[in-house]
Image 1 (cartoon, helix red, strand yellow):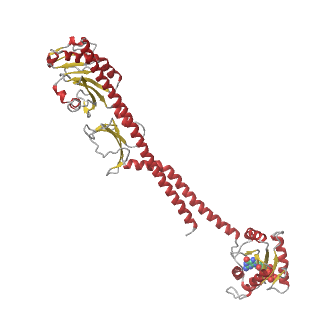
Image 2: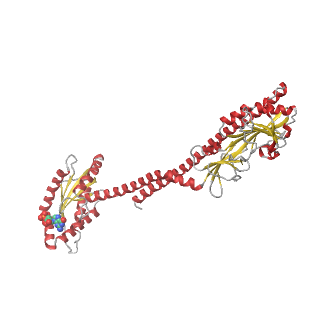
Image 3: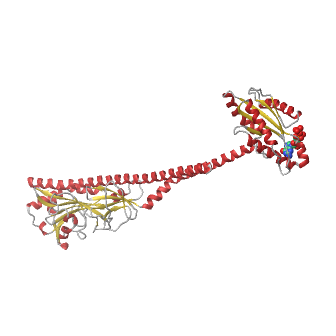
Amino acid sequence: MPTRYILIGLAAAIALTLSVVEYQAELRGIRQAAEQAVQVRANLINRYIILMRQNVYALDSTIEDRYLEARRTGSLARELESIRPFVDYDVWGVSGAAGEGGIESLSGTLTGTSVLARRPPELDYELTAVFSAESQFRTLLEHVPEVIWVYYTSLSEFIYIAPDPAVADFRFSDVLYTKEFWSQAEPSVNPEGRQIISDLYDDAYGQGLMISLSSPVVVDGRFLGIASLDLGLGLLRGATGFGEALGESILIDENNRIVARRADFELGETYDVDHREDAWIIDADGTRWRSAIVARDELRLLHRLPRSTLYWNGVRESLLVWAVLFAMLVLVAFSVRLREALAKVTTLMNRDDLTGLLNRRGIQEAYRPLRELALREGRDSALLLLDIDHFKHINDSHGHEVGDQVLSTIADRLQAHVREYDLVCRWGGEEILVFLANGDAEVYRAIAERLRQAVDARPMSSANVQVSVSGGLTLFASDESLVKNLQRADRLLYQAKDSGRNRIVSDLPDV
Ligand SMILES: Nc1nc2c(ncn2[C@@H]2O[C@H](COP(=O)(O)OP(=O)(O)OP(=O)(O)O)[C@@H](O)[C@H]2O)c(=O)[nH]1
């Protein structure tokens, strides 16, 4: 196989390998960015939930503390005096809402059954505790943008909820005890009294999708009620898209139901994926999944990276490197072709067209290294100048074309009878110069004679022409130029011509 194909093939193999390596690195980069984003987003959501849990816990503790204080001191909240019946709705209560005959000190609305009308002392302590936590209700509503509702629901059939809904729109009813915030948090299902994050639900009052954080209020081991916060999804939604990463993050609950994501979703929509933390999972569609735990085990952040998104972005990111590699490949192919063309041109410049022998320029370049070598090894080198005998006559009697054939045949015969490293050059019209190295006088004489005989051996060309050559053989004086050496060889050649032709005259010493 030509070197050209080997070189280009090698460059193509290297470019292909680098392309694959680059593509793999891009895919790895995309996956790593997604891994980092999942971690950062999960942390963000986690911190947010912790903060909100602390808020509920603070509310819960305040109500517990204030209850104990009211019981100890016997001092009751002034708001108790304002509790009155809302006759149209069959509840008792008091509201901070204008138009409800409300009192300004309240940010919420209290409603309950008739039990509020004939209150035992414990109920007064509980109501006092709730009213005393008013500043917390207010602070949460005013300073935590995600908080939609803050409320305390009592086992003694009342609810205090802020901000203050109109009694016509919302008031206490037994149905509240069937709601998730109650049914999941109350002691029979939650004996340790831990905080509960509800499932996602749609607010009855039209505030959109939300989740509740609920914490049971227990005083001296007695369960009184539940303090709750309703949180809108704005921040959770924002957190699922925080930072740069391909694919999308989806917050789900322990039943795999979606809690938040950037894109729209239906309430109750699920994502059933076999989660394994810190590992990529590939499903049957080739979609990659990564997950992180949020809020202990109650929520999880799933990251979904579709196969096409991964691969196409891998391709897009690799394109520039691929283009550079392709350009380099083209450059390699081009330079290989250029080197070949240059080598061809050099050969053409150094060779004679007719005979294929070295020309003057060619031998000037080629003989030097041979001479250097001969000098280093302490050997002589020699020049043999050959001239075709009566060549003019051949041209005249057989034509120039035959003359050319003769020249070419002589070149072939000489070339066939020299050693591999001897140089044969067409010096002029019918003059041929042979540079001999790596021998001694006897060897050179023998070669010269062999060459003369090779020409003389048999007729040549279609015209059957018998041709001979005469030659001058001289040792190469390395302190003199090629031309100077040639002048000596030329003189010897003339002597050969003068003394009858078809012979070699040399000035080489006898060995
Ligand atoms: N056909 C052909 N003839 C060439 C070429 N180059 C030189 N010649 C001829 O070679 C002849 C050389 O003739 P001369 O120098 O007079 O000498 P000669 O006839 O060879 O006689 P001697 O050298 O004295 O033996 C001329 O007629 C040139 O035209 C060539 O490339 N092709």
